[in-house]
Amino acid sequence: MSINLSNSQVNIRDSRLGSITSYHGDAQTLIDQSKDRALHFRNRSYSQCSDCSQGCAETLVYHIRGAAVVTHAPIGCNAGVSGQNYTARAVSVARGQEIHNVHMISTNIQEKDTVYGGLEKLRETIQEAYDRFSPSAIFVTSSCASGIVGDDIESVTCEMENELGIPVIPVFCEGFKSRVWTTGFDAAYHSILRKLVKPPQKKQKDLVNIFNFQGGDTFSSLLKKMNLRSNYLVPLATVEQLAEMSEAAVSVHMCETLGTYISAALEEQYGVPEVKAPAPFGVEWTDKWIRAIAKETGREKLAEKVIAQEHERIAPQLQEIREKLKGKKVYVFAGDSFAHSLANLAIDVGLELVGITTLHHDQKVDNTNSEELITLDNLIKSRGNITEFSVCNKQPYEVIKILKRLRPDVMIVRHQGLTVLSAKLGIPAINEGDANASVGYDGVIKFGNRVYDALRTIKFEKNIAAHVKFPYSKWWLEEEPDPFYFEKEEEK
Image 1 (cartoon, rainbow, N blue to C red):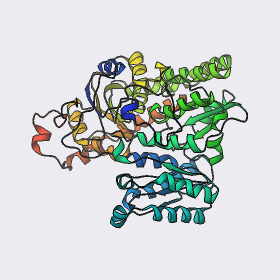
Image 2: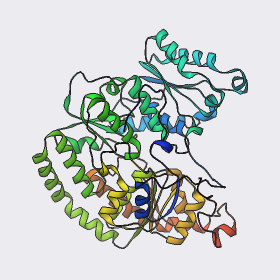
Image 3: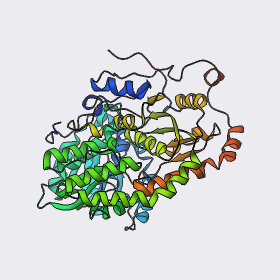
Image 4: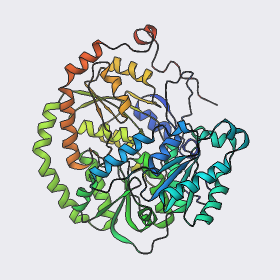
């Protein structure tokens, strides 16, 4: 991989990684075809809902301490900011940190601005953000509207940076540019790499970069046993922390989809090794993760001691959980590599995996030197082929039909708005809203207990299902159409 930081815009996942949002078949075939990037985008003639690159970028930059965000967009593009602010405050409390509030102002592009341009409004809004929040950096996120109009955001940010004396950083995350919304994460990281990260002044040999969503502080206790410190990035990090991430001993991520771009860039640009192991979800994968970190930091003997102690500590609880969950079937519906991690974890606690739906699929990873980062390949090697595997970008009408056919006992979901799908069918669901909740050895136990508690609510879900009316026709719910009926032929 070669990172071009002289280019203000990131190379989108569609072309960079061959990412797709549609597939149905088995997991091994998906991996085999991905090796040659043989899979092509398939469009849907009907799409129920989706997500946006701008929203993904703002999931990161909203939560940088000491920074402000100007969104060059219609006000509707910021409908989720109150939820983001709630999350920031809740996670601050969970980590025992000072409360963080989102500092965001929208340029509120209107019809007039789409005709005459909105650059003057953008200048005024950047100035307002500076005056109101006294930030040490200002991010300016683009939108579909500003991209279509063709506003020269970069020239304005350069002018304002010189005038204000702080970094004013454009983040090019227009939703229409990529059909894979996780490109927005890459766009945010790309802007941070270009404008904030500095060459290392010294190497901090016990510091571990953790590229992460907003979540509880579950990595620190695990790393402390290895005499290592966690550097949570990007949410709730300071501008200063971002500048110093090049000084870390290694980089890890709780989700390869989220963190491989910036981890690969740090390895290439500054020699910070990206740990070549799956994220620590499940006992075996946590073992691999610890050993991979130990290899890079010279702690191999300590790693084996920690692993042996942790296995012994959780063994009785894990055995009890596996007995409770034996024979219960699970379906996983989440983002690309995070779904693979959750599936591995579900099998580890004794559940029978009947299928997976991921929100997209990357046919390759950013760090081309390591197959260990391909989580689906890791899952197949650890657990065998998954015969029911599909990819869809949040299409409830497809997943409903899959669930009606497979009838799992429980569903694991990453996005809370999708948990209702199974509840409406009388199937309990767990929302993995805190992406860190099930990390490490303690996470395995916590996850298993949560699944068991969810299964005990079955009467509640049955009551819901008895009174639900789906917004789909009888033809779709009860007759023959395949769940993927509305997919078009592959583009040539």
